[in-house]
Image (cartoon, rainbow, N blue to C red; front, side, top):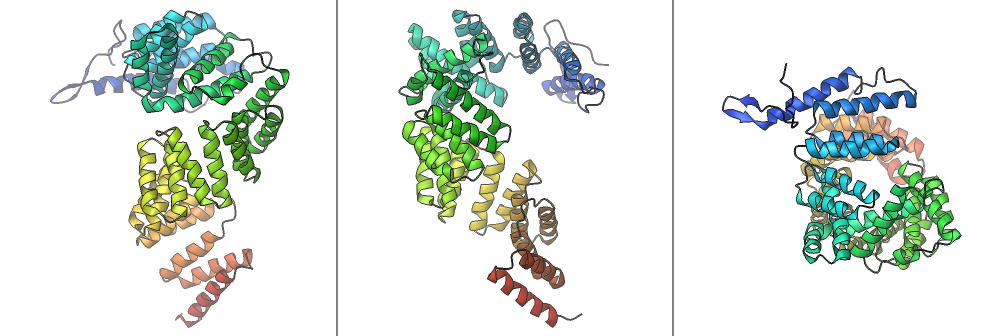
Length: 499
């Protein structure tokens, strides 16, 4: 029954308290209005969408168009529609959609203005692109997408301002980039290399050429002296092009969860472009994912060929950690956070290796930095739990593991560790539930869970159940003398127990 939007896309302000009006009501109305059409078209449930991809596309695009009509003030609706139009090859529609978005979005966002700038750059209208990028960095980010877009816009604005000698614009872009310059350069390095590895049928497309051109210009501006940059510049040999295409296949395989395929493509890449540090870094990443010992040598080659590559040092650190050389791993991870002091995952990995060396206070400091800089929330929570467990702060450890389980409730390792810590904290019922869940989701045969669950039941007075679990563990790993001794002691305790 709500009144619709006005011509400028604004919803009426809605009274939500007895003390006045609040724009929260407006946001809720907008959300409900769009949710209604999503439910009506079964976009949420998936019912009635059909199985034919081509048949489903118009309905999906129609839904995006309806979302823009119902809630024109939300920039993300317009960006989603523009992306669909771009994927369908409807270039005029993309430009029209973005123009409508700029008029209707309240407020316009950095992500929207960055998209406008990229379209202008695609049309080789660099003055218009520069204006859009500068407008983007002047806007406040509303989402993580906006945070990234604002950094990308600042990088592009920095390049264009530097090339035209605009000192004031250069200084503004540099202030916005701040400590994010290294991460932004790393992103655009990957973008440029990915575009350089495009198939022959796509290599000449304007959007691909733009990614190559702008990406290389951004890396040159933000990471001057990058060795990989000089190696991929024109003219490119046929061997270089073939290697870049293999590198792209390796990255795509890794992103799709096929690390063995990524290793094969990565090996092919380094055979053809052995001088490219990024190729060795990706091979090391794929090898680390498959626990291939070759990751250590690949990581070393990556850091030798391009010591400016954050991912090279990260993968070398992972390989050193896997090999048990904690001092070397620490050196590598410290290099990671030196290159990019905002990289949360780097601090989390540093915390992990410090914990392996029993330097718990330093590990706690590093994992706190990881959380501050937005590292992987599951990994950060899990490592924080490890640190607290080592410090015997069992309630804090249990809470940290619970935070990890909110993100991935079926992760066996997190379930196991949470169960152990809840048990030590005296949360008997919760620990039992977690151990049972850990056994249910144990896909790799972690028999330590049987032992630790048995210990928990034994402390709880359920000696018979504990013995059954110990017997399963010993049957699975009959050569473990410690587990055999635990079983013998528990069996004696069971025999001595009253009925």
